[in-house]
Length: 85
Picture 1 (cartoon, rainbow, N blue to C red):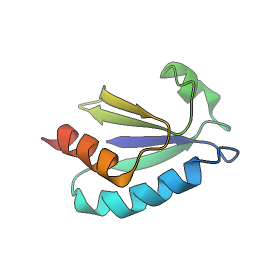
Picture 2 (picture 1 turned 180 degrees about the vertical axis):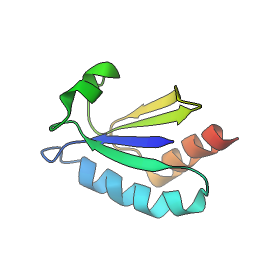
Picture 3 (picture 1 turned 135 degrees about the horizontal axis):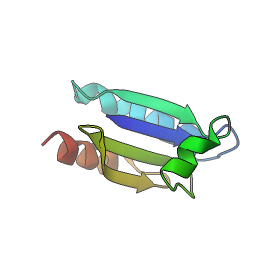
Picture 4 (picture 1 turned 135 degrees about the vertical axis):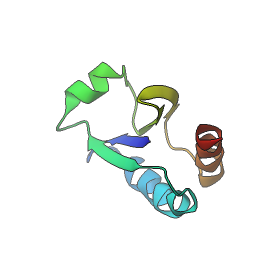
């Protein structure tokens, strides 16, 4: 699972969403979602997120990897490949 932590006021969150839209279709079986931490700050607190955007990659309900800040398509693709093996 990939969770995109974002906020409306975050200038890099929109471009990061565009990267995810391009990369995710190549990874069948990866469930993706987005959380607006401006509306749900407890999610950011629970995962100790201090910078946006942040991508949480979860395997079996546990955090496998966290990517902080804008990440390019090749970096996101590589992280997803590590996640799915």
